[in-house]
Image 1: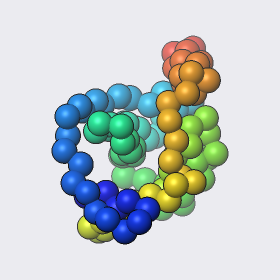
Image 2: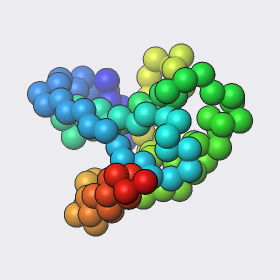
Image 3: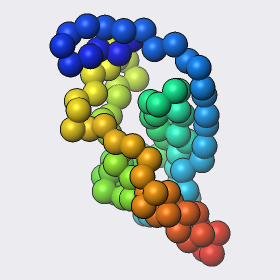
Image 4: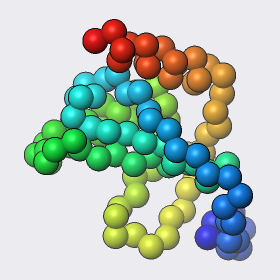
Length: 111
């Protein structure tokens, strides 16, 4: 369900689905896997550690990731059953973002 600005809720029927690896080249990139899941024009990220990590490492990673190339949006608690995305937290896939992601992917391969 998507809550529109004027309070109406609308069901989002999945017509297109994509999944991609995010080539994060920042701090702790070897300790966390990042995937983007896109349904229609909405997308979100899933972040999973490759092994059990201390909360301090997870927090450090999230603080660095949210200031990286992409606008990460809002954090979703695993226990939440609904989600509201404020207009100022929405984004679109701009060509500059694509080029930046391409550069990050090359940086990861070089290491």
